[in-house]
View 1: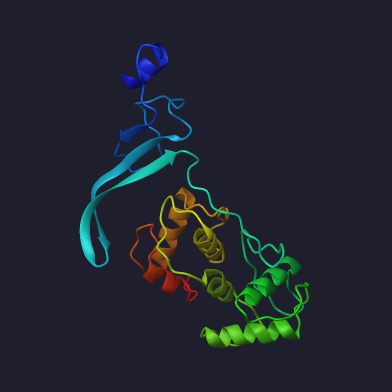
View 2 (view 1 turned 90 degrees about the vertical axis):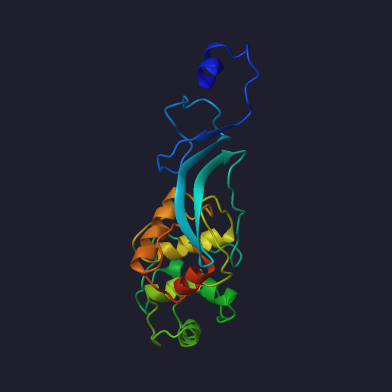
Length: 233
């Protein structure tokens, strides 16, 4: 009725600026057959898409609902710059070794290791002695086999390294970018590194949780960050 009034008699009623939809269809979006797709979009809908289910937080099992918001601008992640403009985000990461390394990914690796205080050389594309020394130091410090080869597990350890704050649907920021890059380094997904914990990121997190034998929730906890930072695939 509300949407019919919006369409048929928009001047007759004072319509709400935003709407809340209770539609337990299990789909994390703001769409419903109750309201036409042009109503209160973009930026003015919230949908409770799951209700009355149990989750465990801090060792306590509680019964809660889940909602998805499209309000205002939505979740927006701040921009980031690394090593004067070197790109460190790729849809897929490659195994690197001397004589067979992609220049852009060599630069990305140097940049990441420099930001961790391990690499001190130039940002050029050469897979040389200084980079190898930094690789060996990182591998030693993180319990990885010491080798001239930089593996996907190595990528995951350096990409995930950082603060371990909980991230979930709707979260946005540099931590979500780190997560998206790390999941891309599993070789299973190719996420957009947009820094927004969207539906695709939820699905990728759930896939990783299942593979890593973690509780499958689509929410990455501090404890699971710790597991991810070991390079667990």
